[in-house]
Image 1 (spheres, rainbow, N blue to C red):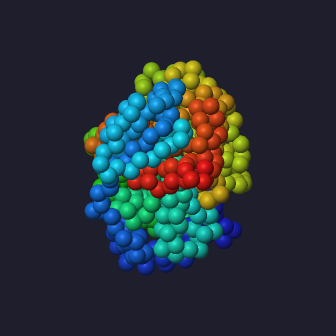
Image 2 (image 1 turned 135 degrees about the horizontal axis):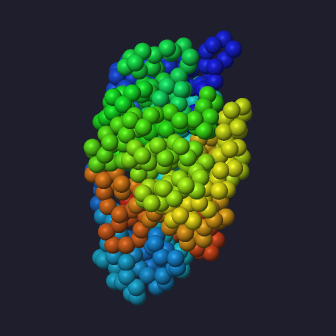
Length: 479
């Protein structure tokens, strides 16, 4: 949800138009192709002097003892449990006594709650950690460094996995996976695919008019969005993102909050264009998540074969029933107050106020019709706002029990991520504590099944944070 506003002179004041960032881009990419930009950004990450851990050093087994377990699915805790971690996976979950393997590290949790790491199904890894001003005035090395720092803060908030729904996050993902940065697992979408004048089209007006099939703009080469105005162009853009490493595709079917040249009730892609994107993703055995707010946009996406709708805040009863009948996922965000978004003005604020009003009806509709619902936050362009990631979970208390909220942010979200099939960058089970699952675990000081607000204060209440069998925080002594 990036803002680009033309100034009085016909220029624009957004990131895509800033000479400083354009100069930095040219320096970092050496004027290569967009694919080359990704390689150049990866080189910039490596150039920060961080050692790669692609060849992971074997770590001894770890045993969590004296825990009360939330397994990601059950509505109640299970006491007297021991959890054995070996080779970054959960080896065993047993009641009673468990003889620790030789050389194992034993972590006595003191009766605290052990649970799966949280999953944010709608995050923007490169766009959350810097203000608009910093994005406009900083060089690429700084932007990448800030993104890495925000990735670590994301993990320290207990989010061990995120689905990135727009932005050139491929280099950051690779750096985290290689151990060059600390951060969550990232399921990248790459550039969101939109139409001329649609949400995400942040080009300055100087880039218009564009000939059909013409060259990409500077803005598109930054990797935030890709413009397509025909079914053939949609197929091309989808294939490009899949080539770059997308695990799923983001299609934009309407307007967006922080795109001041759009409104929430508008539609963009035609049915054949949407179908081209959905089918091209399906050809690679993955899926397209479709950004849509009004009922008409949601229904058009479903008619095109979409299996996941992003947002949907203006949905009506008929559309909700259709989603449920078709088994379509709703990946949405519990925006309930203006503080859940960076300060907005003009059409952007009008759009957000409509979204807020829609939230009140959206979740009851989803519950009434049994729509498969995922939790995400979509927090952008503010380090302070990003800190609300756990707080956003507490907004769901208006409609869900704490157990339902925790399940949504763990095993339910993991079920959505698994739709990427063979393009899943982290094959295996996420969001659960059971044998064979990835060892992404949190130890909580208190019972989040009784008080979900514990997760809104991670510095205080997350005592242990583990991702892929590696402990990134152990504050038991001070808790």
